[in-house]
Image (cartoon, rainbow, N blue to C red; front, side, top):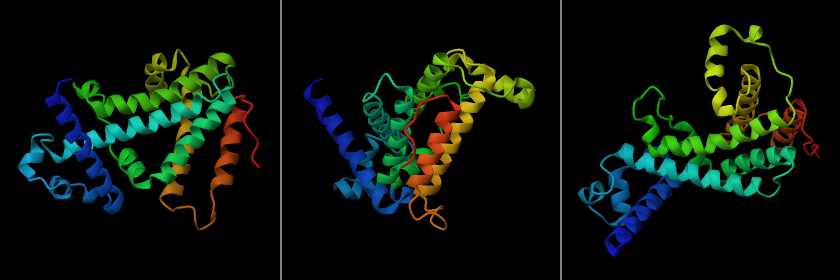
Length: 234
C-alpha cells in the first residue's frame, strides 16, 4: 500500500469513527453526511469523495460493526474448542454482553436489513458478507452439535411443505442437517436473539430488573434440548 492509499484508508477510518460517535450520542438519525463532515471539519463535498451517499456510509459502518462483533465472539469461542456446550454458552453470552455494552451499535446492526438474496448483486455487498460471517458462527456451531449427536426434532409433517421446502434449501449451509433440525436451531436462535433485543431495549424491566438469570436459564434449557452439557444457572 503506497502513501496515498494509506492516507485514504486513514481518512475512511476517521469518517467511520466519527459516524459511530454520532450514532452512540444521537442514535441512527444523527448519522448524516453533513453531521459527520462537521464532526471532522470537512465540507460535505469532500466527504462525498469517500462515501457517495448516506446509505454507503451506514453500510460501511454496519459492516465494521458486524466484523467487530464476529471477532469478539470468535475470541470467546476459542477459549474452549472441544466442549460444544461451553462453546454455545460462551458465544451466546458474548452476543448478549456486546449488545448490552453497545446498545446503539446493536440497534443499528440488527435494525438494518441484510440485502435480499433475490437481488442479483447481494453476495457482493460488504454488509451482506459481514452478516454471513456473523451468521456462520452459529450455523457452524449447530452443525457441529448435530453431527456429534443428532438431537430430536419435529418431523416434516408437523412443519408444512412450504416451510420444509425453505429449510431444505438451506441444508447445504448447515452441513446436511434435515429441515426439522434446522427449524429447531432457528427456533432457539430467535428465542435467544429476541430475549437480548428485549433486554437491550428495556422491554423486560417491568418484571426483571436484571435479566441475566433469565437468559442463563433459557440458555441452559436450550443446551439440554440439544443434548449438551451446559453450565447450570447459578
